[in-house]
Length: 359
Ligand code: GN1
Ligand code: MG
Image (cartoon, rainbow, N blue to C red):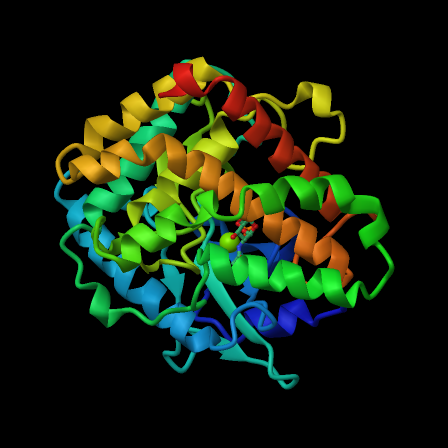
């Protein structure tokens, strides 16, 4: 990560108190994240600062405009039911001149949120109770946005879940084979090519109108949901960078992909990777308890398929990035993207073995 003058950056935001320290948080694959502590007469206040990855988000201000609209909408709804709304919805801190982000002298865009304290995230789910809570959280998020007018939102990443365009990127990475890595991944490529047609179902269903376009999160991996420290409550869905019009199946898909896997997304020991039928059912029972208020029968029918398809699109994307030389996702080891792709493929294969039980 390049060096940033973090103290200077925080000084551009409307924060009071004295800066005590700033630490790196390396969880996400895309943006650079830092947590700061400020001392104030009322005690320590924490903030999350992020440099928006402009290789991924070409129009960072549009990302922030979406987040501003969506968080204001959700906050209004939550206020009717909860007193601790700032723990259940992200709060954007404006810059000193009232903007949603600060542009530094290198053209980098920075944003700040109130840090939500006394929470935890999970990289894999411990039990059915948690799966149920996660399903409810994603269902609630969609429900809260069900009366939000999606035409007010920018499309932050066009064709984000378009399988055909993701395969076109894979084709290109294979034909260029910049680092000579293709020889290593024949088996993975064969599997993905065999599944190419089937994988288009979500995008095609949205485009041909057999499922409705709604406002969706588009990145509902389980570590984007904050739980209370004791794990008894799912409080807040974070990472709103990709909130835009889509099908709810993109969200059910990513939650299934991440929450039913008995291993982490980048597990190297593939023996540990499997799709838990129990967790799948608990997750969907939680989800449906909220989403049944708006789900159409076709959406409902495609939910299990959405888990397989979303796992597939991530396999394609990780493998593409491995072949292209790790230009998109942050990596922590040389074959990190290959490990991630293999884990996704392994999970799909296990879903196939258990397909009748999952349905
Ligand atoms: C990225 O930002 P983060 O780490 O939550 C990616 C998602 C992938 C995910 C895989 C904008 O999400 O699409 O599902 O990695 N976000 C973007 O872990 O590409
Ligand atoms: Mg993200």
